[in-house]
Length: 161
Ligand SMILES: CC(C)(COP(=O)(O)OP(=O)(O)OC[C@H]1O[C@@H](n2cnc3c(N)ncnc32)[C@H](O)[C@@H]1OP(=O)(O)O)[C@@H](O)C(=O)NCCC(=O)NCCS
Image (tube, rainbow, N blue to C red; front, side):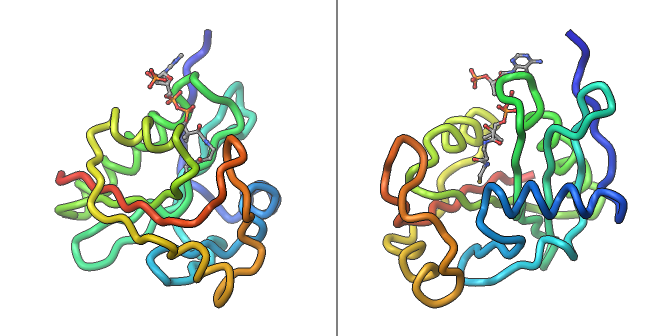
Protein backbone atom coordinates (compact mmCIF):
# COMPACT_ATOMS: atom_id res chain seq x y z
CA UNK A 1 0.00 0.00 0.00
CA UNK A 2 1.31 3.46 -0.91
CA UNK A 3 2.38 5.71 1.94
CA UNK A 4 0.37 8.83 2.72
CA UNK A 5 2.14 12.00 1.56
CA UNK A 6 1.93 15.32 3.41
CA UNK A 7 2.44 18.84 2.07
CA UNK A 8 1.81 22.38 3.30
CA UNK A 9 -1.76 23.69 2.98
CA UNK A 10 -2.09 26.35 0.25
CA UNK A 11 -4.79 28.81 -0.85
CA UNK A 12 -5.75 26.37 -3.61
CA UNK A 13 -6.84 23.91 -0.89
CA UNK A 14 -9.30 26.37 0.63
CA UNK A 15 -12.47 25.20 -1.22
CA UNK A 16 -11.76 21.60 -0.19
CA UNK A 17 -10.86 22.67 3.37
CA UNK A 18 -14.10 24.67 3.62
CA UNK A 19 -16.28 21.79 2.54
CA UNK A 20 -14.48 19.20 4.67
CA UNK A 21 -14.51 21.27 7.86
CA UNK A 22 -18.08 22.49 7.35
CA UNK A 23 -19.29 18.95 6.73
CA UNK A 24 -17.58 17.50 9.80
CA UNK A 25 -17.61 20.39 12.26
CA UNK A 26 -20.72 22.40 11.29
CA UNK A 27 -18.86 25.50 10.05
CA UNK A 28 -15.30 26.67 9.38
CA UNK A 29 -15.12 28.21 12.87
CA UNK A 30 -13.67 25.93 15.52
CA UNK A 31 -13.93 26.72 19.23
CA UNK A 32 -11.16 25.61 21.59
CA UNK A 33 -10.68 26.75 25.18
CA UNK A 34 -13.38 29.38 24.67
CA UNK A 35 -11.68 30.95 21.63
CA UNK A 36 -13.28 30.96 18.15
CA UNK A 37 -10.73 30.17 15.42
CA UNK A 38 -11.26 30.95 11.75
CA UNK A 39 -9.73 27.85 10.15
CA UNK A 40 -9.56 29.65 6.78
CA UNK A 41 -6.77 31.78 8.18
CA UNK A 42 -4.69 29.11 9.87
CA UNK A 43 -1.57 27.44 8.48
CA UNK A 44 -1.57 23.69 8.12
CA UNK A 45 -0.90 20.53 6.18
CA UNK A 46 -2.79 18.33 3.74
CA UNK A 47 -2.43 14.55 3.59
CA UNK A 48 -2.57 13.00 0.14
CA UNK A 49 -3.29 9.46 -0.99
CA UNK A 50 -2.28 9.15 -4.65
CA UNK A 51 -2.54 12.97 -5.00
CA UNK A 52 -6.07 12.96 -3.57
CA UNK A 53 -6.53 14.99 -0.36
CA UNK A 54 -7.56 12.66 2.47
CA UNK A 55 -6.75 14.65 5.59
CA UNK A 56 -5.90 18.03 7.00
CA UNK A 57 -4.36 19.60 10.05
CA UNK A 58 -4.54 23.30 10.99
CA UNK A 59 -2.49 24.81 13.78
CA UNK A 60 -1.60 28.05 15.48
CA UNK A 61 1.49 29.06 17.39
CA UNK A 62 1.39 31.34 20.39
CA UNK A 63 3.84 31.84 23.24
CA UNK A 64 6.22 28.99 22.32
CA UNK A 65 3.26 26.65 22.12
CA UNK A 66 1.62 25.02 19.13
CA UNK A 67 -2.06 24.18 19.23
CA UNK A 68 -3.52 21.70 16.79
CA UNK A 69 -6.87 23.36 16.02
CA UNK A 70 -8.16 20.83 13.49
CA UNK A 71 -7.13 17.31 12.60
CA UNK A 72 -9.40 15.40 10.28
CA UNK A 73 -8.84 12.39 8.03
CA UNK A 74 -11.33 10.85 5.60
CA UNK A 75 -9.53 7.50 5.72
CA UNK A 76 -8.76 5.83 9.02
CA UNK A 77 -6.06 3.47 10.27
CA UNK A 78 -3.69 4.06 7.36
CA UNK A 79 -1.34 6.52 9.00
CA UNK A 80 -2.98 9.74 7.77
CA UNK A 81 -3.38 11.21 11.28
CA UNK A 82 0.06 10.03 12.39
CA UNK A 83 1.79 11.57 9.33
CA UNK A 84 0.01 14.89 9.83
CA UNK A 85 0.96 14.95 13.52
CA UNK A 86 4.56 14.12 12.64
CA UNK A 87 4.75 17.16 10.33
CA UNK A 88 3.09 19.41 12.92
CA UNK A 89 5.56 18.33 15.61
CA UNK A 90 8.50 18.89 13.28
CA UNK A 91 7.21 22.40 12.51
CA UNK A 92 6.66 23.13 16.21
CA UNK A 93 10.26 22.17 16.93
CA UNK A 94 11.49 24.35 14.05
CA UNK A 95 9.63 27.30 15.57
CA UNK A 96 11.21 26.62 18.95
CA UNK A 97 7.95 25.56 20.61
CA UNK A 98 8.24 23.92 24.02
CA UNK A 99 4.85 22.28 23.92
CA UNK A 100 2.11 21.13 21.62
CA UNK A 101 -1.49 20.91 22.72
CA UNK A 102 -4.75 19.71 21.28
CA UNK A 103 -8.38 19.68 22.43
CA UNK A 104 -10.97 17.04 21.90
CA UNK A 105 -14.39 16.22 23.27
CA UNK A 106 -15.62 13.60 25.74
CA UNK A 107 -17.29 11.49 23.02
CA UNK A 108 -14.18 11.22 20.84
CA UNK A 109 -12.74 7.99 22.21
CA UNK A 110 -10.89 7.37 18.94
CA UNK A 111 -9.03 10.69 19.18
CA UNK A 112 -8.28 10.11 22.89
CA UNK A 113 -6.70 6.79 22.04
CA UNK A 114 -4.88 8.22 19.01
CA UNK A 115 -3.32 11.17 20.88
CA UNK A 116 -2.37 9.17 23.96
CA UNK A 117 -0.61 6.59 21.80
CA UNK A 118 1.37 9.51 20.36
CA UNK A 119 2.46 10.39 23.92
CA UNK A 120 0.00 13.24 24.56
CA UNK A 121 -1.18 13.44 28.17
CA UNK A 122 -4.45 14.77 29.48
CA UNK A 123 -3.69 18.24 30.86
CA UNK A 124 -7.19 19.57 31.58
CA UNK A 125 -10.83 18.53 31.49
CA UNK A 126 -13.33 21.38 31.16
CA UNK A 127 -16.57 19.86 32.32
CA UNK A 128 -19.60 21.24 30.46
CA UNK A 129 -17.44 23.58 28.32
CA UNK A 130 -18.84 22.34 25.01
CA UNK A 131 -22.41 22.96 26.21
CA UNK A 132 -21.36 26.56 26.92
CA UNK A 133 -19.68 26.98 23.51
CA UNK A 134 -22.83 25.65 21.85
CA UNK A 135 -24.99 28.11 23.78
CA UNK A 136 -22.78 31.18 23.41
CA UNK A 137 -20.31 30.78 20.54
CA UNK A 138 -21.22 28.10 18.02
CA UNK A 139 -24.80 26.77 17.93
CA UNK A 140 -23.82 24.34 15.13
CA UNK A 141 -21.86 22.13 17.56
CA UNK A 142 -23.58 18.74 17.47
CA UNK A 143 -25.33 17.61 20.63
CA UNK A 144 -24.67 13.93 19.93
CA UNK A 145 -21.19 12.81 18.97
CA UNK A 146 -19.37 9.56 18.28
CA UNK A 147 -21.15 6.39 19.45
CA UNK A 148 -24.22 8.52 20.24
CA UNK A 149 -22.46 10.05 23.27
CA UNK A 150 -23.70 13.54 24.26
CA UNK A 151 -20.95 16.09 23.51
CA UNK A 152 -20.45 18.09 26.71
CA UNK A 153 -16.86 18.32 27.93
CA UNK A 154 -13.59 19.55 26.46
CA UNK A 155 -10.44 17.53 27.08
CA UNK A 156 -7.05 19.16 26.57
CA UNK A 157 -4.00 17.01 25.89
CA UNK A 158 -0.41 18.11 25.63
CA UNK A 159 3.05 16.86 24.86
CA UNK A 160 6.32 18.46 25.88
CA UNK A 161 8.70 18.63 22.95
C1 LIG B 1 -8.45 10.59 15.10
C2 LIG B 1 -7.91 10.50 13.67
C3 LIG B 1 -7.27 11.82 13.29
C4 LIG B 1 -6.88 9.38 13.60
O1 LIG B 1 -6.36 9.36 12.29
P1 LIG B 1 -5.96 8.00 11.52
O2 LIG B 1 -5.48 8.39 10.19
O3 LIG B 1 -7.06 7.02 11.61
O4 LIG B 1 -4.78 7.52 12.45
P2 LIG B 1 -3.54 6.60 12.01
O5 LIG B 1 -3.93 5.70 10.91
O6 LIG B 1 -2.38 7.47 11.80
O7 LIG B 1 -3.33 5.80 13.34
C5 LIG B 1 -4.38 5.03 13.83
C6 LIG B 1 -3.94 3.60 13.90
O8 LIG B 1 -3.49 3.16 12.63
C7 LIG B 1 -2.15 2.63 12.75
N1 LIG B 1 -1.41 2.98 11.54
C8 LIG B 1 -0.52 3.93 11.39
N2 LIG B 1 -0.02 3.91 10.14
C9 LIG B 1 -0.63 2.91 9.49
C10 LIG B 1 -0.55 2.38 8.18
N3 LIG B 1 0.28 2.86 7.25
N4 LIG B 1 -1.39 1.35 7.86
C11 LIG B 1 -2.23 0.84 8.80
N5 LIG B 1 -2.33 1.30 10.05
C12 LIG B 1 -1.53 2.31 10.39
C13 LIG B 1 -1.58 3.32 13.95
O9 LIG B 1 -0.55 2.55 14.54
C14 LIG B 1 -2.79 3.41 14.83
O10 LIG B 1 -2.93 2.18 15.46
P3 LIG B 1 -3.89 1.96 16.68
O11 LIG B 1 -5.27 2.01 16.14
O12 LIG B 1 -3.51 0.65 17.24
O13 LIG B 1 -3.64 3.11 17.61
C15 LIG B 1 -9.03 10.14 12.66
O14 LIG B 1 -9.69 9.00 13.14
C16 LIG B 1 -10.03 11.24 12.38
O15 LIG B 1 -9.83 12.08 11.53
N6 LIG B 1 -11.17 11.23 13.09
C17 LIG B 1 -12.25 12.15 12.85
C18 LIG B 1 -11.89 13.57 13.23
C19 LIG B 1 -11.36 13.65 14.62
O16 LIG B 1 -11.88 13.07 15.55
N7 LIG B 1 -10.29 14.44 14.78
C20 LIG B 1 -9.67 14.69 16.06
C21 LIG B 1 -10.48 15.69 16.76
S1 LIG B 1 -9.61 16.53 17.97
